[in-house]
Image (cartoon, rainbow, N blue to C red; front, side):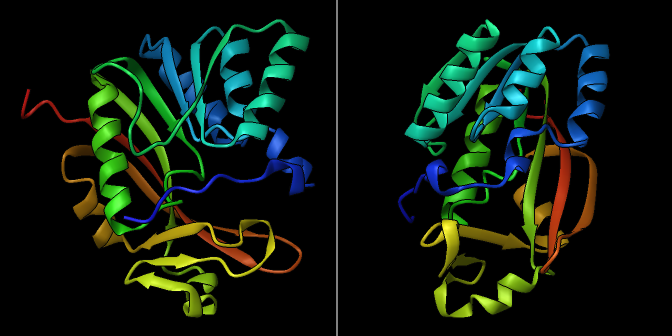
Length: 218
C-alpha cells in the first residue's frame, strides 16, 4: 500500500476549490430530510464543504492530511465564527469511533491512494457510518484521458502517480463501473453516475456515487 501524500495548498491558485460544488446542495436537502446531523468531510481540503454544511446546521468534522489546508480552514472558521471539529490525519486510519457519523462527504479525495488503499478507506467509511448512514463519494473513471496519459507513473493496474503539476507524485486510483460495484459490495448503491467535466484545456471523467451502509451483517 502506497503511503498517503498530502496536497500542498499553497501551490494551488484556482479559486474553484473555495466554492462549494453544485452537488452538495442536493445532499444538504436530502440529508436534512433524513434527519442527519453528524457529517464527516473526508479529505476536506480547504474546507469549502465543511463550511457549507456547518452554516446549514450540521455538526461537521473536517478531516485531511494537509497541514496548510487545515490551517487555512481554521482561519476561515475563526473569521466566520463556525464550530467545525478539525483533525489532521490519514484517511487509511480514521480516528473516530464506530458509528460516529450519519453521513460522509468525500469529494475528489479518497481516490488519492492505490488499489489496496481504496479498499482500506471504504472499510473505514463503513465502520464510522451509523447503521442507516449514507455517503457521497467520487471516484476517477478509467474513461479519464489522464489514465492513459500518465501511464509512465503507473504503480498498479488501477493507480497512476501524477508526473507534473501541483498533484505531482500524488496517487490517483481509477476504476470502471464493474470495478466500483465490486468495491462497494458491502454497501447499498443508491445512485451511480459517470460525469464529464470540461475546462479550458481538457476533460475529466468521474463517478459520483451515493451509498448507504448495508445492514445485512449487523
